[in-house]
Length: 249
Image 1 (cartoon, one colour):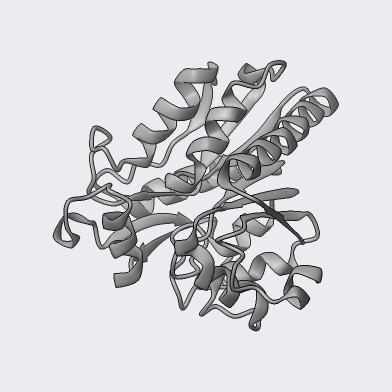
Image 2 (cartoon, rainbow, N blue to C red):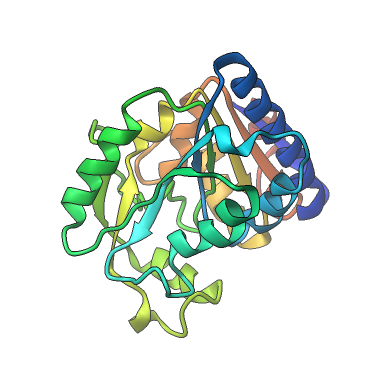
């Protein structure tokens, strides 16, 4: 794992997008395709905008999965992650092969189906974020570090749900679903490369918890420290509580 700190969100997003574009192109050149897991959420806005504008990526050769989706939320809802991916990634690039999580009336069946498609081959690259409560995907603390299931039905904790209100996806807490489908922690770690985009001051406490404290399921994203090819992109404010020792690790 490597931590990179930038002056602001714009420079963070630019360099992260450059790394992501290079990795996508390299995987396509080597294997004729690339299997990608994409994160959603406010932290990814600028990164995805820059990445989708990067020339030379053969997007029809990208096979797309994503990390999580709310249970009980239609694709037309502004907070739907399927809607997010259509608007910010799929429709902009012409990706044709995608496996979007649609919990429908049977979330466990959807998890099984998409999990089988995901495990049909290795994942080359995963874009992730870190929640204000330290979550990775929707694996809130205490996260399940042991399950080998690719996707899980999870309960969303109060801090996670409040973050969604704070980011403007919902008007108040009562509107936020209490459950979601989430890629498991072990499944995320199977990606050959992980690029974590973590800007903004509101993430500073979670960053400190995950990258200074012990690796723990109470700080789920701390598990990224065990991955040999993970890059954590921070800006000055999200990194503001980190000690120099933590950055140097």
